Image (cartoon, rainbow, N blue to C red; front, side, top):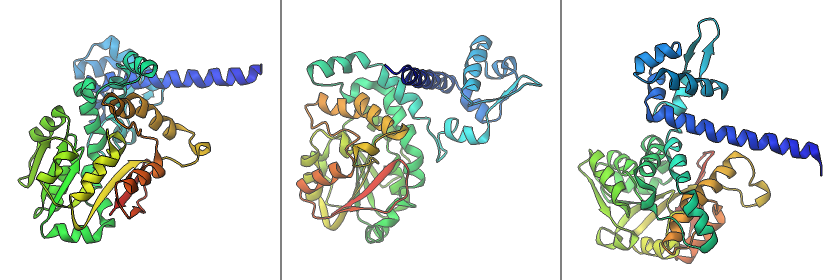
Length: 346
């Protein structure tokens, strides 16, 4: 045995453990309002910060110590003051920021609560149903997706479908499948006020959250699946944002979507980016995609007896299910994004 190799791996596992506990500390700081307060400019000694936020000083001391150790918050040795830089606040302290990663502070703890149940599924088959993950997962998915859906979907991403946006400027019908809490639906409705936008999701909790937060008159939310689409179409555009890999029956669902399009209509698909070659599937991004796939995407599909496509399928998986569903064109759109790939199906 190569002891040096063992020690190197031991250090790597220690780093992973530190990362996991740091996510835990960030989740605590998020849920207690500590991150939001520091993002808004609250700083000082731990006693000062505890007094301002109304939190327990002893916990604040330990949490900020851990966040300083992880180089998340800054500490001034001359004053003992802790602060959060604007650059870091944009990532962990502001849900509206285009750089926000705050949704993961809900999703990862929520997913890990089901480790035992998923382990049993690994042994015997099946999985954990989406609804079993509860409101924290619904909230986390919304927080993770809302900034990009609000800021980028209509203003940047859909500019790569100019024929479709030209249609929608004067009317038409759009469906967002797997709409979650409605961020994309609301963004589409604002961008195309002459069009009608339908949000469809099988999660009652997600649709309730979407309805509660809706502010646009040209939207409608439906608890349902792709099988319900024909009642509301035909559609000039269907968006499926981080959805295809979650579907119980991706080929059947995409077939229904295709049949629900108007002549010349299109489907806009967003999926996690993954290299086709396993040799290139290394590093933090690939690890994160595989991890959330096992702990959420894959298991909730298998729980329903589904295909279990998983989040790590990459372009070949999307192309395969789209072609089986009868789409004759699967175009990879030239949208620069480090995390996601984009497709036009027609």
